[in-house]
Length: 128
Image (tube, rainbow, N blue to C red; front, side, top):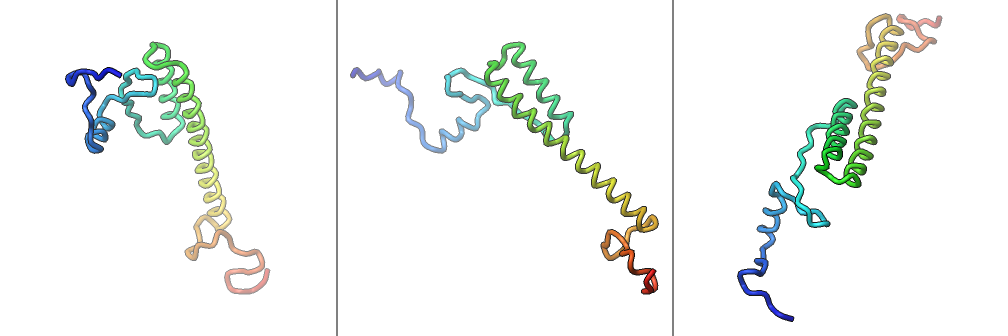
């Protein structure tokens, strides 16, 4: 096996040098093509997830990323959007439950953290 001249060899890197290169703005995927590191903002609401899906679609449409990679990203983003929608619905249900509890308590929540006044007791301790 013929050795390459010294100026054509890849330099040997230490661990810290490899980590610095890995944290740089350019990433080398397995196929060897250079990709920019993609910064993703907060993805908590359904609208934020849908915007992210739109960004990935545009990147696929303009051939910035391959469709196989974009399809995977959209699949994961769709799952994130579903989870965000479930979280929003759960928060709405919790708010409705709290409103119902306040109505059952005569408009004010109890101070001791009870959700309801038991039907068998009245305010002065007598049974109804």
